[in-house]
Image (cartoon, rainbow, N blue to C red):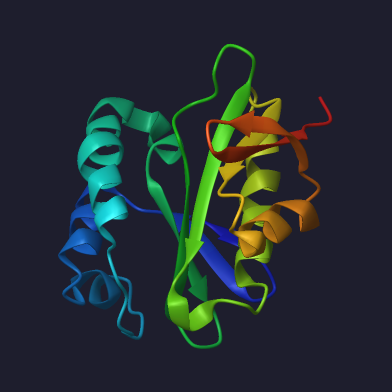
Length: 169
């Protein structure tokens, strides 16, 4: 588990991912958290079905690079958002991060803090030399999260902006 001043951030197990998808309060009950309505968007459901769950089945001990990390607001004991890596580091030591806040928690710096904590953790892992991300050009909030964490824009991939943060190794 990672901890910041306001947040606890931890990776979900395969069984917890299934509970997350069920969205029936079972995950919050298991984690002793307060429930608040959250949406599992069609895009997230698709990511679970096509990427996250199959990767978790193959990942073994390295599951932290394949699962969803949940962000818990400590003072309210509620899930505020999620982060993930899109697999283990590649041959160049790059790892891609994705993230999203639950709607009720947007606009107060929670995801900036969470991305910073997860990136710091990633750079402590032996094979990680850079963290990359992509954002929609219209998603200014997501771009600001990356900028505040030291990422720099490096180009475009299709219709998305590409971002990169180098480690100190």
